[in-house]
Structure formats: structure tokens, C-alpha cells
Amino acid sequence: MPLATLDLSLARWLLLVAWGGFVGLDGVSWLQSMVSRPIVAGTVGGIVFGDPHAGFLAGAVLEIISFRHPPFGGARYPESGPAGLVAGAAYAATEGGGYFPLLLVVLAGWVIGWVGSHTIHWLRLINVRLVGDPESLSRNAAHIKRAHHTAMRLDALRAALITAAFLVPVAMIVRLAEGLEHGVWGDRLSVGLAAVGIACVAGSGGRGLSVGRRSWPLLLGGAVLGLGIAAVLGSG
Image (tube, rainbow, N blue to C red; front, side):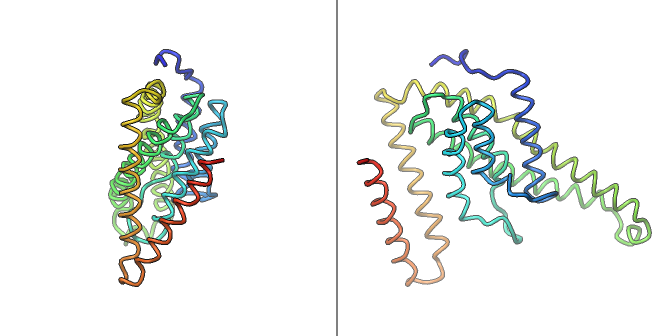
């Protein structure tokens, strides 16, 4: 399908970029209303492109993957808000959907999530400089308030820029890939991406179950159950 058919007006792009900034802010800095979860952000991205079902599907897959990384504690984890929004919007932009574009948007969402994670780390380093001397903060409540508001604005701007940078390229690549889905190369790429995805899931699950050898049967049982569900859904 030609790239020129991608229906992305300036108003729609600005809306998605603004919402990307909001969901980035919602993740940690303010509100935390769960709209930054991939299943919600992806659905909103689909709504903007007129296909909430496609956005929901892309976001739901990313939501399942993100269960490996709970959004709390000191560990680094992928940022799910802008990633889910871009993935949902890009998949909805294909109109026809398909397994190959879905694999691509999930992979793109995973990459965007880790890019967001690194930018959050860099922003936290900037926040340390915004705070300045802890002793002076205790004597100047107004400075604390200004520093906090500045940090929030920077966080929203960071997430908005990530959304702006990835939205159009991912949507265009996925739209182009839609035309390859039923060809020979599309079949090969789909199998390759599926194999990489399964390997990543197995590695992530194995890492999570590394507390002892007795946990490995749980991974095997989950794999068998997942394959069984896939077989039932595929035969329906």
C-alpha cells in the first residue's frame, strides 16, 4: 500500500503528540491514573485513527509483555505510555491490520519503551541539578515548588518529543509492510519476527524464574498452555 495514503493531518499529529506528553507525565510525575498503560494508550491511539479495536489489540499485546516489568521500585523498565500510543496509532493506520503489521508495532513499541526508559534516566540527572543544594531548599519552599513544576514540564516535553519522533516513521513503515504481508518475503519476515518474539518471551520468563530449578516447570507449563490457547484461537 503506498505511503502517500497515510491519513495523518497536522491536527491529528499534534493531538497524538500532546497526548503522548500527557501519558508520559502520567507514568510517574503526576496523576498516575493508569492512562499510561499500553492497553489504554494504544486504544486512544486507535481512536484517533478511527479504529479503536486495532489500537486496543496492539496495546493489549504490549500490556502482556510489560507485565514482566512492574512500574514501581528502583529497577529500570520500559516506558509504556508513548510506546503504547505510537503502537496503537500505527497499527490502526494500517486499516486492514494483519499479523505482520501487528508484530512490527509490538517490536517498535518495545524499542520505544526502552528509549523512553533511558530518557527518563537522563531527565532524573537533570532534576538533581534543578534541586540544587538540599540545605537551601529547606529554607526556600518557593524554589522547591518551581523546581518541581519545571521537572514536570520537562517530563511532559520529553514524552511528547518521543511520540513526535517515532509516530510518523513507525506508521509509515507499518503501512508499507502491510502490502508485503501476503508475499513470500512477508511470510518469511513474519516467521522471523515471531521466532525472535518467542525467544525474547522465553528469555524474559526464564530470567524471572531464575530463583531455582523448581521454577522451570512453570515456564514449560505456561508455554504449553499458551500454545494450546493459540491453537484453539487459530482453529476458530
